[in-house]
Amino acid sequence: KYGVESRVRLNGTPDKLKTLVANGVYVILENWLHPNEDIGHAILLRGYDDTKGVLVADDSYLGVGKEFPYEEFVNAQWKPFNWEYMPVYAPDKEELVRAIVGEEWDDRRMFENAVARNRELASGNENDMHAWFNLGTSYFALSEYEQAKTAFEKAKAIGWPKRMLWYHIQPIQTYNALGEYAKALDLVKEALWFNDSFAEAHLEAAIAHKGMGNIQFAKFEAQKALELAPALKKAQDFLASL
Image 1 (cartoon, rainbow, N blue to C red):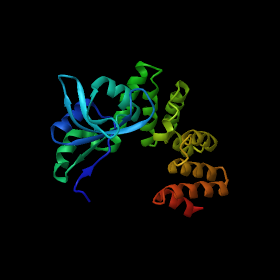
Image 2: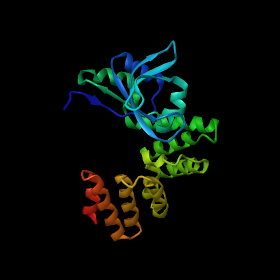
Image 3: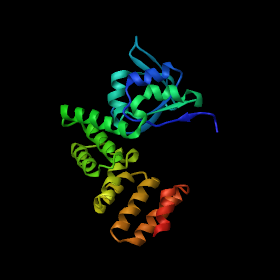
Image 4: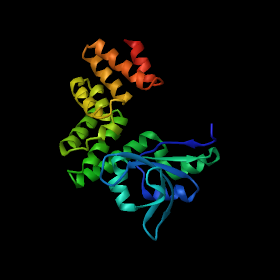
């Protein structure tokens, strides 16, 4: 509609972000609003300053031209989202963007690289909760559910933030994929803490209830998901399958 394209990627690095920006590509980043807290946010990256060691971004909450120190941003705000970034570009720049993103334009290679990066971090620090959690989301994307489960349970044992499942429901999806429906429902409660309008969490609850043979509960949760997000096709298809 607006003549732009975008592609969500994970496992980003400051150098990759800077190269994109230097070539006239804006980048949207998902991060914590402030370092080491658990409120998700997004910023529009539009510059950097190596002399100051900062990324420069517009922030709908904090204002325009805000500066984010490289190391603090990468480790305390961006890392909890597995270094997710989304280049936004005109169609005639796609080949350039592909070249900058490199081999990680391919989803599988991107997730495999994210696994390797986070495994190295977790090996260096067994208590690196976000490295373990990122391992879980990366393994989940590769459909390696047992490995994802192990990583998520390690992260949870260390202690993930209260709002973590507001932004990442892969732990719930992992339990559902493995048929561990009671555990999935336990995590759904956490995802819906002070956030009952989370349609995807209600859908995961519906999937778990169906797996346990509770069809009426499954219908209720699927209908709730559709009330909250009428265009959620997965919920539409699920309800039609009951």
